[in-house]
Structure formats: structure tokens, C-alpha cells
Length: 62
Image 1 (cartoon, helix red, strand yellow):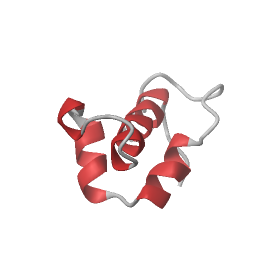
Image 2 (cartoon, helix red, strand yellow; image 1 turned 30 degrees about the vertical axis):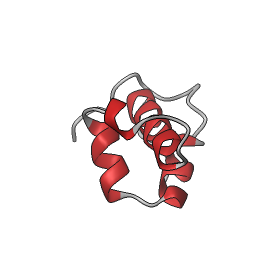
Image 3 (cartoon, helix red, strand yellow; image 1 turned 120 degrees about the horizontal axis):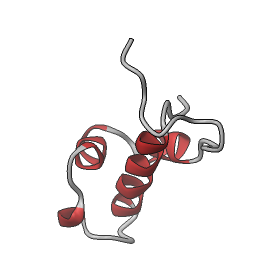
Image 4 (cartoon, one colour; image 1 turned 45 degrees about the vertical axis):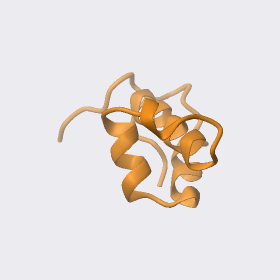
């Protein structure tokens, strides 16, 4: 599942970093904390690896 926005891609990257022990879980906030709690490392990798050149800064609500 690719990221829908640059903000989502960055949040997934932060959560993935914490999941791997590269940063502190306590430093997470908002969406990245929710992602850390509810997603696997593989899911986070998939979202964080999305090429963000063509993504909007924030996702449009449908």
C-alpha cells in the first residue's frame, strides 16, 4: 500500500525508525505513534518507501 501523501510517508518513516530501535518510541506523536502501534514493520516499509516526488503534501479527503 503506497503512501497517499508526503505527510503519511514521513509518519511511516518515523514509525519504522522506532520499530527498528533507531529512534525512541516516546518521541513519536500523532499519526506516527498510531502507525507504530497498529502496523507491522513490513507494512511500514511499504509506505515509507513510496516515492514522494509526485505526492501532495497532505491527502485530500474523499
